[in-house]
Length: 496
Image (tube, rainbow, N blue to C red; front, side, top):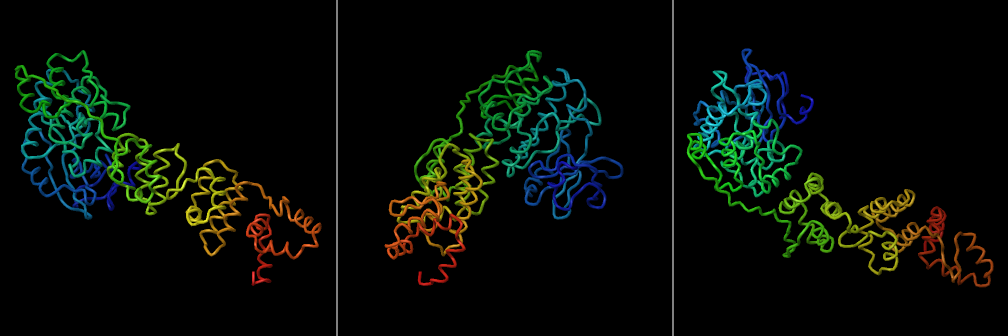
């Protein structure tokens, strides 16, 4: 319960009673992509309760099709109702009766006489109704309570409308290679059956230790290893069911013929085509995430609209799956400029930081360029965003310098300040050289300047005139810590 308690549909928890009769006992799965699964009890009999998240409930058409399915090899839903605004389904609960948990030995006799033919018949009923099962795996095939010579195929998998979420959360070890291209039809069920048979023979998953994309790519490019200890007949069935080309993969008829002893051909004309990493950006194809990031940095205005683009996210998911969750989170930021900044950084970490097309990787260069630039608006915009101090921090600059850059950013954000003053102060802070050059005389302190003035007292008026007109001088005084004195002086001499 603790692992998934915070993910359960609102208003449902262990101990609750559904429809005045089903008492929720424990959580099996808090979120399979569309529903939470509970073990519940009614009159001391265990049942499985499937509680759909709002908006994830099956369509009325799918529900009607399920109701019409009639097979002794399918687990039937015994009750349906709405509770707390959620659609709920009740079905039998087979505790430790699946092909794995039961502990029963699986041999050729049981496979050929019970498991394979029963599941095949169950799938035919599902497919004839126009549905795809989507959840064929050993833990969803149960020995019948009426005898070991019959198995039941459990609950249908996640609705195709929710399949993209499903594949990222559960069951992907049994998905076929065509899912890489977003194809998921009835042929997928036979692939899943083939993988199930391998698992029953080996006792382990075919794709253990791999993530979803690695599994699907391996399924699409790798010749499945069929255990030597499998009989020739079983090897043949597994090969037929795991044909990579879904158009020629074995189905109901081929399985039935093979079980009857007929020679069924295996045809696989599948050619692996890796998913594209080419992104159409501003009418131009750009290949590779690093190049996409660079194109974004150089054409910021066009790139802002690409934040969260499904086509871009698909490329990230295919070629940088480890970064995918972070990219999705970044794209949810309502500040699209900041989202783009972070997106560029994660897609191409070696690229210098950019803000609205302006490179700010070298903070000292940024400060120098701002000081001499006629149009300071782009620099001020970068300062207002807080990006400059962030980059400074990322570059390992001293924390005291970062704090001073933040003070300049704050000044820029508040507005109303002197643009040149801000530029000069930034330049002083970043360079660390608090030297005021006056008439070719370097002054590192006010004392140095006073000494120069005393030595040139005859020209005091012209000196003062130069001070008053020199923004760099006032910036120098402020970075030296004389901000209060400058304010008092300005207040006393309002004309300046």
